[in-house]
Image (cartoon, rainbow over the protein chains, first blue to last red):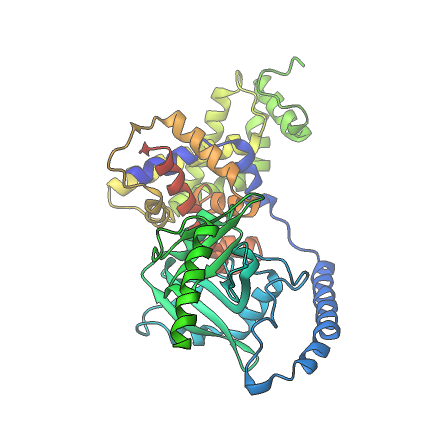
Length: 249
Length: 199
């Protein structure tokens, strides 16, 4: 009954919204636009080849792995920290990860499973923490991995971890039992980046950086006592010193 | 000025204005002109709900009759939306009658099932919202969506188009349409919860 009421109430919404979505308002793309898009894609491919191929040669790629800082989540500005992956990366992910790959993560053949590519999070992690580290954001390194909501039957069932293997993006892990999509919706307008903190076990959260401070919001709640970036940094410094003294001993 | 309180400046298209003038002049050609221009539009709205050409035709005729009764005094700024709203309302009423008689059909049952996602499970709802406040909230909600998401939402829940029709209409994949609808429903639910509205 409630949904019927909602459906009826929608009938009375602003006429502008009704006309905006009218099926008579939709416009077919002119033919030239299709060719323009193709031409733009070609330019992008040529541009990417000119800019990135020489770097690939220089990296040497020893040991078969890809250096962790090779693929920036932001191809335009390698230093910038991003909350959501940019379109060029998403296109690569979509190209490399097939429906068949994803289906391999389904519980059975009846379960359909997919990725919401609109919410792909570059994963950053705090590294090289020293006693001199002044802020958490200064210690962050892009891990060359992404997290993305896993969708089944139109509901988010958890998160895929996307990594590069032999030059191709692939799914390395599926964590279930939480609605990453809704969590991203809550943070997408405010958070600065998504963190994985392996020093604290399976710990994920969002870091919000302002002019004056840093705030860390855990989504796994392993470290509820750490609220500010400074607190978390202190905790990581102590963890690092314990690890360091343990390895020395 | 002097065009009546509902005029919204340039938003009244000349052709629509002429048709509305015919209503105000009580000229019977008003209905034939409306049918010529908006007959198909109204029919498609009714058909998505009722899935019967005969019933849809009757709803469209009733729409024109309602328009004749309400103009004057009304002078709608958006004539298509004005007619569409009447058609949708009449068609949903007819659908309700049919569904009580176990003759339900069309997209409505599916749409209702989807809209169930938006209903908050509130333990201590502050208020049972009245129709006016609910419409106002829906307008605010639509205003927060991106244009694309809003169009997709309206095509599904106002026009009751199928996912396939929406995908084709906006040249996008069906999964993208589903994803957009899912997100919008979640956002609507969050807003209803945040405002403590019970339906």
